[in-house]
Length: 233
Image 1 (cartoon, rainbow, N blue to C red):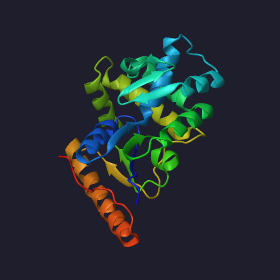
Image 2: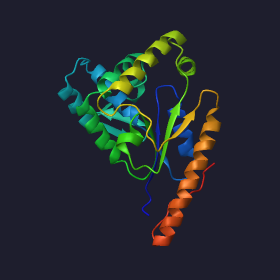
Image 3: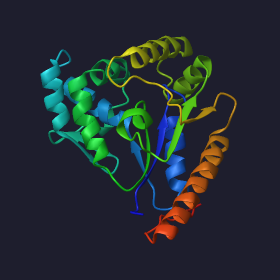
Image 4: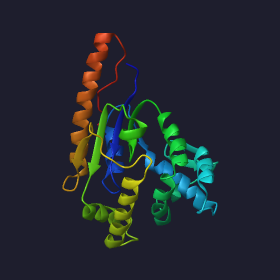
């Protein structure tokens, strides 16, 4: 088969998607990490940067068209916004921007053009962006644990404040009409509340390698190319 294979990791804020996805990409030879949520954050950060927080849907979509991803660097219309995508202001506003259908169409199209061996994480990766991904994971954790994790990462807000913010975002992400957060029927569900990052990664690595071997065996029968199931660590 062609060397394309997507591991789609979805789940709510604070479930550990980013950390797990990064480590998973490091463990799987040839795979690269894609933080799709960061792309929406970049658009939001750009709108804040140009002092257009009340942009119309059309203006948001136009900004999204200027979004570029170069390694870990995110820019919009040539403006590097990488350093500001995790600020509390952007975090509080990104769900509003990402809920706009016009914005989602533009960003999703950019995501689908990122082919190859990918570990992609977000909130609609397995359900909308890569619905045919051979491996789909839905990572969840209790609200209390997710709030604690956010506080450890960025202690500028209290656990209680993060809890309120995360609960609000969960509601927005799960109830939006366009591409809502959901667990698809073919996804592996993992509750990370009482698991270490390495335990979660190991569980996913084992499943990915199983699927890769099956793909290799299928392609060997068909005389096609195969994807490496090796590990870089």
